[in-house]
Amino acid sequence: MIHSPRGVEDLLPQQTLQYQWIEKEAAFLFSLYGYEPIRIPTFERTELFLRSLGKETDAGKQMYTFKDKKGRSLSLRPEATASVVRAYLQHKLYGHSGEWKVYYMGPMFRYERPQAARLREFRQIGVEAIGEISPQLDVEVIEIGAEFFKKIGLANFHIQLNSIGCKRCRPVYEDQLKEYFKLNLANLCSNCRRRYQYNILRVLDCKKKECQPTIKGAPVIGDYLCEDCQDHFKKVRTGLKDAHIEFSIDPHLVRGLDYYTRTIFEIVSSLLGPQATICAGGRYDDLVEELGGPSIPAIGFAIGVDRLLVALKKEHKELHPQYSSVIHIATLDQEGLTAGYSLARILRGQGIRTRVNFSLKSLSSQLKIADKRRARWVIIVGGKEVEEGKFILRDMESGHQEKIGWDEVKHLDRRLKGNG
Ligand SMILES: [Zn+2]
Ligand SMILES: [Zn+2]
Image (tube, rainbow, N blue to C red; front, side, top):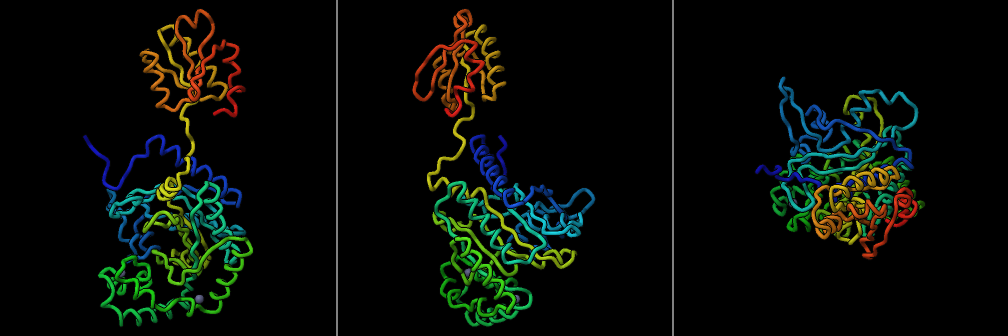
């Protein structure tokens, strides 16, 4: 038997229904804020990601890269922002007035060491808003993330905020950081010593115990922000307070990707342990230009849907929907099957999800199947019922049974409404 590759999982029907529920809620909420859906390709030219993510970031190194038949290097998307910006440039959407606001959902791919809630194919939902520098847009984007988690019923989460400055002030900070870590290099893990060389900010992101005391004493970017960045950050904080959105400042918060500027944030579940980030985002004011476009600011976030579902389960949330089919038709013989099939057509015409049993097994085994399929009701039909013109309707929750005729079947939707 052939198994799926490591780090890649099937989403069976019950799980898929949960993902669909999350996606539906997200699409509805994002549209309230004026965001429109976009679908970007699953793979792009490798160059796009190398230019946007940076070669020395984890995401850049963990790409699934391959050559096509003409020898061109392609990569499965490790995230969506680069593709969204590429689409924005390719279709010259910056000619239009106002910011361009889109949302996406779909699988991303990274060659990670698989562990709980960290897969090689994982699913993200995200928003991107390109073309506006106003700090109020940062507030809106963070609000959308917080509103979304509230809406789906997540109780234990909080927002962590920071500013990582711009290309004017960040290099000054990075120099300070380099100086500081240079003196403490011996106290850092091997991974951090590598990051010290290529991606100094990421040292702050290390979760290893041995590195924590050193990281704690490191300079904070807040002390090095230029005046514009300070002003921007202040307005974001005020805007969030005005919108009654709770957050805390994490002065050592950095993001794993090179392209971020100014406002960055993470939304963290309190119940998830080390893999606690369920949403991450921020500004990327230089990325459009770096990918060959005009200088246009932008901001966005991505939600890790797989982790979000783990967090919801930890909170013992009942995940929708419960019933895969509403009515199961149990057929006792050939006559019952013929009539049952007609009944199903009438029920489906009323918008009721109906499943017919074709196997003609014993009634008790069909009831077991109906129960397994989480059917809310069962209609039992055999030759005797067909002759009588009356069928047995069984409530699977109470076990109550009654007889109903063709006329009642034709109007069953009214009766079942609000009942499952
Ligand atoms: Zn700055
Ligand atoms: Zn470390």
